[in-house]
Image (cartoon, rainbow, N blue to C red):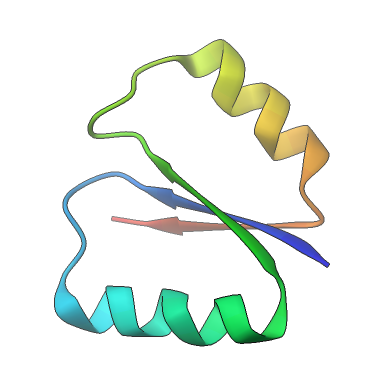
Length: 56
């Protein structure tokens, strides 16, 4: 399963830990929206993923 994790802001240590657990279970890609405002690329990645998780 391909998972896209979108980070809207700098992740807390707890969020980083959760993402690391997800990486053990699935193919995870992290998109740092707070650094990269390329919405066209983000939309493409959303459609490529099986699951999308947004972190605020």
